[in-house]
Each structure stands twice: as structure tokens, then as C-alpha cells.
Amino acid sequence: MRLALFDCDGTLVDSQHAIMASMQAAFAGENLVWPGREPTLAIVGLSLAEAFGVLVPEYDAGRRDRLAAGYKASFHALRQDPAHHEPLFAGVRTTLERLAARQDVLLGIATGKSQRGVRALLEREGLDKHFVTIQTADDAPSKPHPGMVMQAMAAAGAEPRETVMIGDTSYDMMMARAAGASALGVGWGYHPQSALMAAGAQAIADRFSDIDDHLHRLWRDAA
Image (cartoon, rainbow, N blue to C red; front, side, top):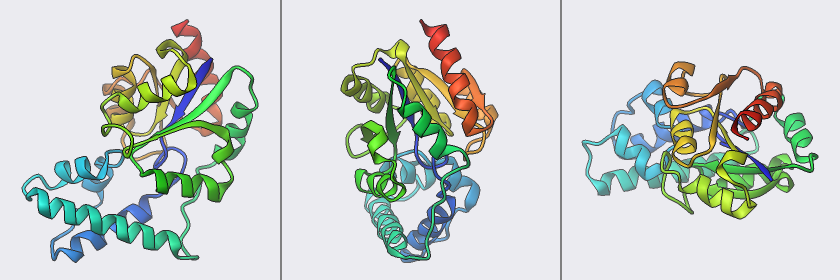
């Protein structure tokens, strides 16, 4: 059985505004200066513990834990605000529905978000029924460790040659290749395409509707 694994933030949904707002609130809560947009985008995809370790390695573990707690509290509050919206990228819904209708393909999620966060998003959009496995930083080591992909393959009964990880960050690409799976980058996310290719991406999708064709080629080449 073929498995298409999707990252969430920056791949399925454009959550950068909520990420930036929550990060700024976390730093303000500690009376610290927020490092800025580009450093923040660079760590999207990592678990919060890993992200703050990269973003502010000069702070001790206790302060990084407080920053992570502040970020989670702010993001949760935003999610409860009716005015808050994290839009799906163009083509996501129709492409996922088309892939989910295939008898030879299973869909999964591998994300640095929490289980609570990703399930809330998928349920809100009515997409939760399409995914047979949801792997998060709650369940496995942070990207780029291959644990999430390996657990997803085990849950879906898929071999590495049958598995493609689709994501927008270098961490997604490195995670996929470390697990023996194929790596498909997307061109609309938070890391530049050059970084995706350097991290092991075998192709880059320019539009979500192009993903079907890329999957076909990657599965064919891996067979």
C-alpha cells in the first residue's frame, strides 16, 4: 500500500500569522526581544523544545520551557478566537479528497504540532476522515529524526519505497530520507526551495494540484 505523508504548517495550512503572533507573545511574556520573522520561520516544523533550543540556545532550559509554555498558551487562545483563521493553501481540499478516494493510497500526517492542535485543525476543516495515521511531536522525537515517518509506515503497513513525505521544510526532507522514504518539497511554504533540495528533496511541487503527478513519479522510480 502506498503512503503519502503530509506536514501540516506551511504545507496544508498557512499558519504563519498565528505562529508569529504566538512567538511574539511568548517572548513578551518573558520580557525578551523576539528574534524576528526569518529566524522564526527557520524553526517551523521542529517540536517546541527543539525550536527554542535552536532559536535561543543562549537561554537556560527553564527559560526555554517557559517560552514554549507561553507559545502554546497564546496559540491555544488564538484558536478559540472566532476571528482567527488559518487558511488552507489553494488546492489542498480537492487534492486530498482525490488521493483519499484512491484504493492504492493511504494518507497520513507527520507534524511538529501537538496532537491536540493538528486534530483541531483537521476536524475544523472536515479533513480528519482522510488520514489513517497522525504522527506528532507528542508521539516521537522531533524532526528531523525519522521516528514519525517510521511510526506512520508501521501504522499504515507501508514500506519505505512506498512512502513519500510531503513538506515545506528541510527538516521534513531530512526526516524522510533518514527513514528511507522519498521526499517531496513544496514551493509555497516557509523554507526556500534551495534549502529543501540541499536537505534531500527529490522534487518540488509548485502547486498543490501538482502533487499527484509528483507522487506517481516518485513511487514509480522507487519501485
